[in-house]
Length: 298
Image (cartoon, rainbow, N blue to C red; front, top):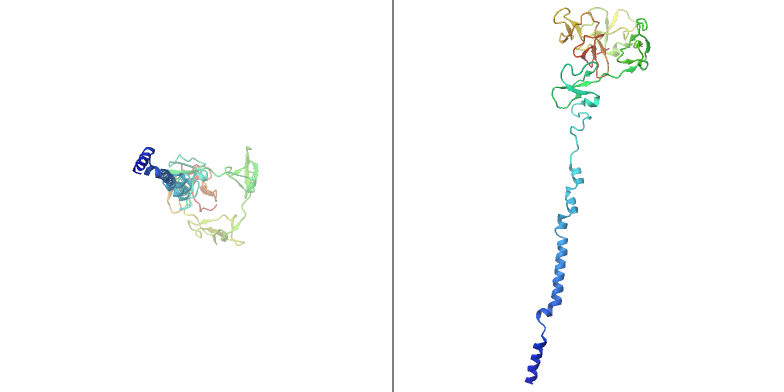
């Protein structure tokens, strides 16, 4: 019996008994592999999904679409044609003008310098807006007739239109003969009918043309219109200070104006509206323009 037990023990030693590792090998290995796979899966779903992928950053708000939604609209210098919402100005370029240096020869006639309160040249100093002259209209569209260029072709009360304002095409030796404007009542023009005396319409008020401003059928009356403070007249004639002055005596410019007819308000309603001479002797750098005046009356 003891001999059999001895040989049984010897046989077991020779064949090898199961060890704890072998006994748990498949289970332990599978468990380890499953743990490793699970760890890898957790890793895949971890840092990358937490923000490493493109989708993570897009969701976080750094995409282009997010920047556009968060950004401010471009209201800078590139938007040059928009009116200045603060003061009602428009850019010089959007009005067809050019910003030039602020000097007498930078904007020669017939171009005109635009009012700085209306036409902006940005924030620069020493610049002004030089506007082109108004485009002429056809003589016919203004109710006129193109006639030969001679003194009797356009008798009064018709008037010869300025060739720079009223076009007769490319023909030579023709001019635009305009009919007299239809009269309006003195009151509708803002005037007052007063007695026809030298002192009844004191400066700066002006006497309106009787052919344009009517005071009805009454005799001995004239239309006294509120004049502009800028209405120019030639003063100090024959002296070193001869020139164009406003009604209150302010010098507009030195000029050889003696003997010239009274200036007229032209280009009414346009950017060039103002007081003009009939032929030259305006205020430099202009030929006929004396001063811009948006409130003058023709």
